[in-house]
Length: 338
Image (tube, rainbow, N blue to C red):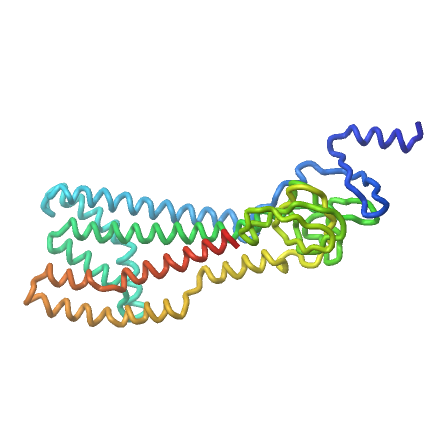
């Protein structure tokens, strides 16, 4: 047995060794597979700090909803305001109303004009001062639900957008002079040849120069059915090779890939309000002062409760909720289905 054969036999006994086909003469190339080479990097678009901030915000909103709901439950017992149970319900109302009161104060102090939150603050506060604890607590419960729902949709949308980054590998296999070498993902350049095997994520946009593979690209196109691709076919970053081994000539990498551009577009659109929504909100804000005036003038005619009904009938609150939820929901679907 020659020295070369002995060395080859020894290498074949190591679990870190694998062989891939060379694009020349159909020979096999021996390569050393580093431990945990398939490990994926943390999402680049999102950090642990971002996660902690989102979790803290969600926890605060859940606490707000819990206390507001408990306060509503106490008020449903029918206790007068200045009894122990009434005072407990009033304290819960004040805690639950904190976000909307702060927003209303900011609108009046900084923007110098009332908005929908000012209307909600006046309506809920008027209910409590008139002794209608149930109505006041119900208003802050609905507001807490609105904030929690919007936060959840925003959080889910952000997660679905950044999921594309979680599939990028830390390292990739490059074919260099018929030798497959493992290099950090950041070192990959245009025109390099990347070797991708079954179970691995394609790290770049490029063209197959050798091999056939079944590729799952649902994260990009939304298609559940894998696609068979062979030589000269285009492949895209973040798609997954299910079967086969391919050699891909790099055309785009990093933030220049198709999936990265899509993620960036969705990320920008997540905080974007359409012109239609802006016009609707502007119209709603312009009707706040007339609504407040009509409500105040109606007190001698229909009483305090009738005036509160007029405030509650304003459409701006519902419009702001429905518009925001609709836009965020469509962005979430776009992020998930491609």
